[in-house]
Image (tube, rainbow, N blue to C red; front, top):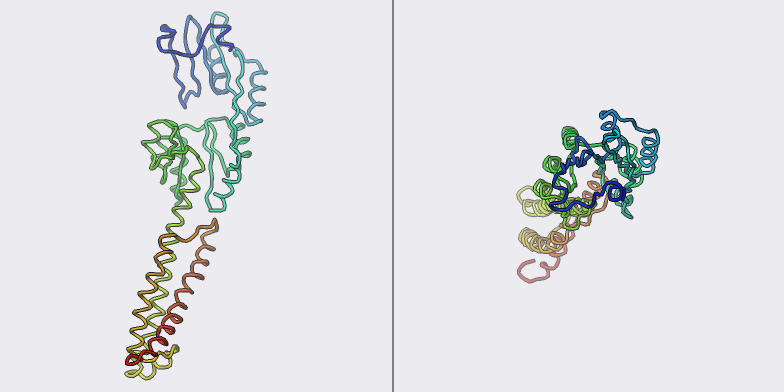
Length: 335
């Protein structure tokens, strides 16, 4: 409104202000502006604009710095607008931008924490604003006034510590970090550079979609681990059950291991074959549905899988083969 009323500037349109020189925003300067009709107008981060005014020989009132700090401490983003003309360089005003943290974000970050995932917010805001937003959202840590190089350095540092890093972003400045991350998720509303750099594109443009990605990945790993654990335990128990029955006649000492007391060697082999065919069919629904993932630590998850699928894989063959053997023994000529 001030630009419209005082300087006649309106929303930028193609062909308007043909004599103006537009200054694009960059992560390094952290401000943008326009040079027109002998005036130089700048808008951007408080520190950058204040430094620019001082470099032009102007003075900055304490009110501007105080107001900017007050906005930052409240979780807002202060943008300063300055001008240099025949009267010198000076601050025109302060714009208060407020990032609205979506409802339920703190709970979503708590869920990531229960999964053992550390969350870091990366922002171009000043440290005061970043801290206020990080506290409100409930993230574990934050990186303020971040340049593309800072984002890359952070990811490389975490990866050097042996961690897998996932990154979500939507801007061109996020592209290098998205490419460097082990999993890069670009927002559908983001720039083409971000989409090209990421491993996948979130069509919903929801930064917390990472939770669903992690859950699906962990569910696949858990299901594969559960099936493998059950299969190994199942094979161990199955051979332990039939080998004593097969070789007890040759090695009488093995008869002590024949705790199932199968009817005969033929019945033992046939029972094991039938059980093996049935257990494969029974595992198909589990493989298709998957093992339900719960946000617990890796140690608890391992103990749970060993308890359910390890012990279950050991017990199931003894019960199944014995039941089949009893049924087979009732058939004349086999038992």
